[in-house]
Amino acid sequence: MAASDLTTLADLEQWLDLPAGNADEPLLSRLITAASDYIQTWCARSLASQSYTETRDGTGGARLAFLQTPATAVASLIIDGQAIPPGDAASTPGFYFTPTLLNLNGYLFRRGLSNVVISYTAGFATIPPEIEQAAIELIAWRYREIDRTGMAAKGIAGETTTFVIKDMPPSVATILAAYRRVPLL
Image 1: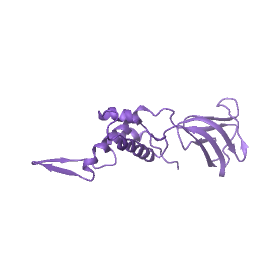
Image 2 (image 1 turned 90 degrees about the horizontal axis):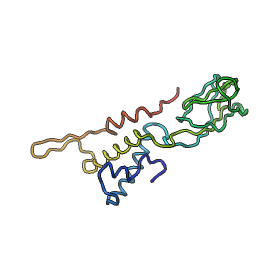
Image 3 (image 1 turned 90 degrees about the vertical axis):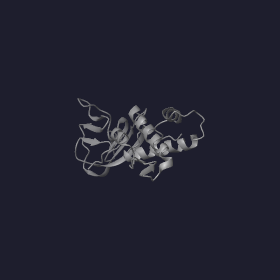
Image 4 (image 1 turned 45 degrees about the vertical axis):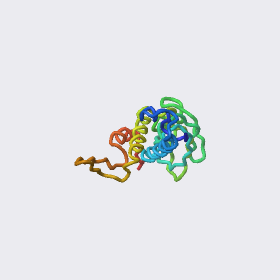
């Protein structure tokens, strides 16, 4: 299992109603990793909790959006070489944060190029159940597609079966859309 995997082999086998130790386990494991990477690329973000250090341009304001969310901790903030201490929104000068924004009280993100350095942790400690389910459904969809890859329709005994030709099922795209990172302007 890769660190970026969004589900487990056991959960996928349960969804597919396959016994543990089945002959397709190597294929299923590869599909888990591939689909998990695909989902995170599609969402334009890493979903699991990890540390980030970013060098950003100062905006002149008191707020700066995190590039990775949800932020869960801020280790340090440096503006123009000056360390900014933790503070609060009410009375203590310094930085404070929400899951999406880094805020300043008594300071500004002075305008400048690459003059702000933020070290923080963001992502989910536990992958949300709806993301794991979306991953399972995408993997199952691709697994069942093995015998019909590239086939748009198939006719048998006067009946025609048409297959969906998309990157992912619409239900999966709907779930993941809520987690897709929108680029900052």
